[in-house]
Length: 144
Image (tube, rainbow, N blue to C red; front, top):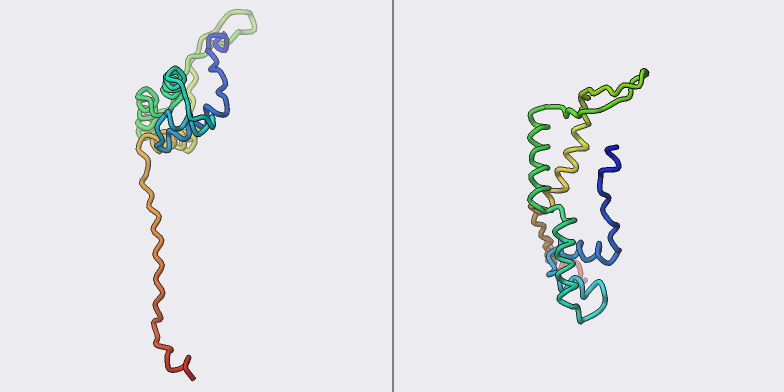
């Protein structure tokens, strides 16, 4: 019964996924759509619809960040999850019980980390330093 009430999200097109990835890397929405579609003219309606998809499927939404924080707080305080379940007994009666689930913290931490990486990305700098210095003067030996 619970599976019927869960609304399945529609699958996103590959172009939409690529555009969302480009926006997560810092490219503006309109420019990301232009790059993905290979088209210089993108309508305002398409940009508006894409922004709504970006909000709906992004991990940066305040609700997602709040859920990640609550899971992190639960893990740090070492509290297991409790889920109400219903089971059909042998005599045909519905029995309600509370199941205590303690998933591996590494699984939850990796999910929390993926959310925080998108919310507060680490700054990476690549420096290329090219210096040609001879520590020993080989001029006397090279000129012989």
